[in-house]
Image (tube, rainbow, N blue to C red; front, side, top):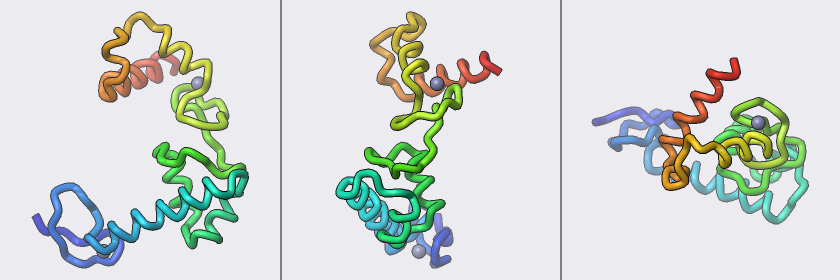
Length: 129
Ligand SMILES: [Zn+2]
Ligand SMILES: [Zn+2]
C-alpha cells in the first residue's frame, strides 16, 4: 500500500511505518543522539537536550512518554500511568508497581505478557475513576 511520508510527504510503501526510509532513518538517528546525549550528560534539562541534539522539546517528551529513554532529562515530568503521581523514572510509581506484582489475579507466568498487563492496567484505571 502506498502512502505519504508524515515528515516529507514523499510517497512510499511500507506496511506499518508512517515515515519513508530516509525520514525513518533520520528519526532513528535523532533518537540515538538524544539517548547518547542523556547518557553522557546525566542531569541535563529538556531545554539543554533539545538545544544540543537539535531536537524539538515535544519529540523529547514523546520519547519519555513512550518509555524509550533509560536516562530522562532532570526537569522532565514523569507521571505514574496508573495513579498520576510524579515519579523519577519508569512508567508506574513504586506503590502501583508493588500492587501489580503482589496481585494474585495475575499469574506470574503471565506477568511478562504485555497485552495481559495492559488490559490489567486499563482495568485498574477504570476501577479508580
Ligand atoms: Zn520522508
Ligand atoms: Zn502510581
